Length: 205
Image (tube, rainbow, N blue to C red; front, side, top):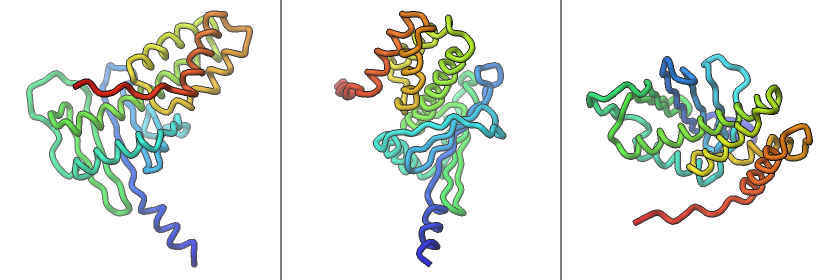
């Protein structure tokens, strides 16, 4: 009898879904599912059965869900209607038990919509850089340093989330003498930063 309320609560836990379809870009399609505890699944195909799983910090998950709250769980129009270039068809969906709401847009002038879109882009970019580094570590050892340079650039531009995702790969490169020394040194440096990231810089006035 105790399990029933727990199961009901789990089923009623909200979930956020974001997708972007942009033929000709790389990837042409991507989607992210984010639960309230910060577990995110990244896919490059709706039927993909082996997603990249990222674990966001509580603060990051709280921020994203607060934006969804301010957007009334996507129960209003987000498309600006302005004549702007195509930037991909984006969809935001709120799911909570039987409740489902969604909004589609190419470009939105709503600042909260822009902010939540950027969060999902950062999740997607983090997954993309992980895939790139993992592929290089497995199949292109000479290309590992290039993948690490892109990862380092993304970190410098504040485009990464779920930093623990990268640690096993970075440690593997650091400790394996078959990789270039410069790659091993860069991997060690990034691992040290990701294990103890500096506090965010104060917002500019």
